[in-house]
Length: 166
Image 1 (cartoon, rainbow, N blue to C red):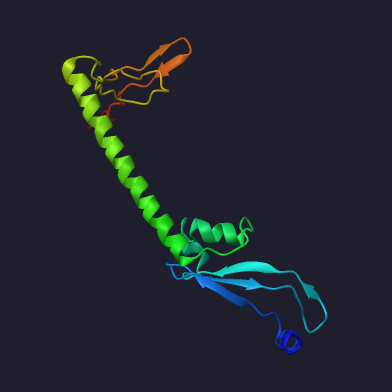
Image 2: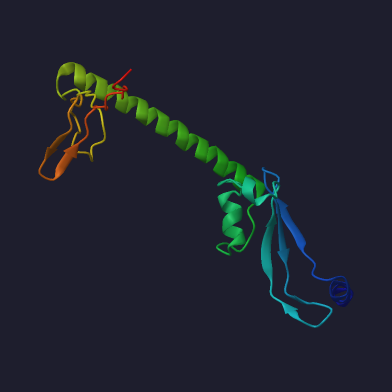
């Protein structure tokens, strides 16, 4: 039987075997080591056929981490559906716990502010960019200021020209 499969593989080209599908619709294949009809040896490899095949539409997280580990050869066996579902529920639990911890932290911080244990952060509004020499200054004068190596432009505009004999 394996000889017949080998002849068919060599006749029709490289054959890939479907290994599984994830919850996003991506299909995973393994191409076993085989010889092509020309006699060339093709190494075994693992591949994914994305549910969304356009490269520019690929988003991080489009392949679950368990399948990514299988494709990269970090694990021998492909993940089972039970394992994938267990890990998804585990990630959801972690997100809920993180939200609870953040809410407790905000409540504790508010309590510390009320009791005076921690100074409330000062909310200052400054104009300009911190890298400029004019950071924190409210307004420029009408005249340009030039002192030493710093120059601050003013808001001076030349007077409109009017003809002398008009």
